Length: 372
Ligand SMILES: Cc1cc2nc3c(=O)[nH]c(=O)nc-3n(C[C@H](O)[C@H](O)[C@H](O)COP(=O)(O)OP(=O)(O)OC[C@H]3O[C@@H](n4cnc5c(N)ncnc54)[C@H](O)[C@@H]3O)c2cc1C
Image (cartoon, rainbow, N blue to C red; front, side, top):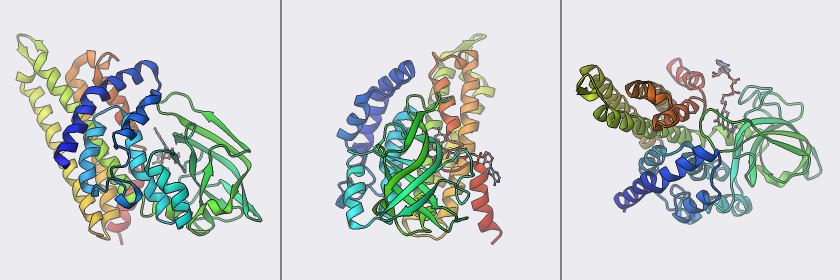
């Protein structure tokens, strides 16, 4: 069944997926039918358990599919990644009622949830400044969030804030905030370098009312919702994204090197070029294996899984930087033009150095274990 599904997804990615990619690049918009098509094909509920309406594909096998989607446009991969992953963050602390209200419609892709952590005036994590004041059964939310993927066109923000007056991780709360809450100004941010077509929001909250019933977990568990059980698989999935995108860059470089003739020979016949392609192939395979190892250890409940996930992401993103750089170089000057598919891959790749934590954050996590 997995082989058939892989073949079906690869065919979609290389056929209709590429046509969507061209359209997104041309219009700078994600066509409205794209998400519906991905949903109807069942691609947005691959990883969720069957009892939630998902397809229950084990995580390491799901990653093989993620590699294929990541060969596609970054906005397509973003829809697939977020829908297949964010239910985990909500689910881990949800009551039965919250599961019905938030998790199941998200798995069915009837609702879109935007992960809302980053702030313009604070560091990511225990430094966060968005705050709530409780009056009766309502929280009043104030502060700012920015760089939020799908933040403009979602149904809920899974938002992290703190009780006013608290510091550090104490007093942090995770809230499901309705997109149409009064007291919120949402600005669509300027265009990004890559990941074209996906919307990103800057939000300003001025005593926006949020029911206390929309809090996931207890007061003080906000960062656990954001960074706890959800983050490890999500980081591993981002690491696999790097592998898929690098594979696409390499494919384009190989194709170009075989076609382009200089001084009477195809580029691929020159050892200098062939060696770059050989280095890329090795780099990609090594990264893929560390990602899959991290995934299997997470599935097995290995306490080192969090460290392994950071290692796999750090390694994969650096690999992606090397591979896309060489792939573009193999193309020569024409690779720098928008008419060459490698130009988009190169831009999309750069975003991966931020998603699910920068290299500096991954190294902090790894160093903690090294120095324990
Ligand atoms: C395309 C895109 C989509 C995104 N989507 C989302 C989203 O959906 N939701 C969301 O919440 N966020 C999102 N982000 C934000 C992303 O998670 C952050 O950009 C990332 O976590 C880094 O945080 P920052 O931008 O605040 O950088 P800063 O915290 O300002 O850091 C700047 C640099 O300094 C380093 N640095 C910061 N603090 C330290 C320290 N203490 N020690 C050493 N180095 C440090 C960082 O690693 C980084 O290199 C998105 C970003 C991008 C580019």
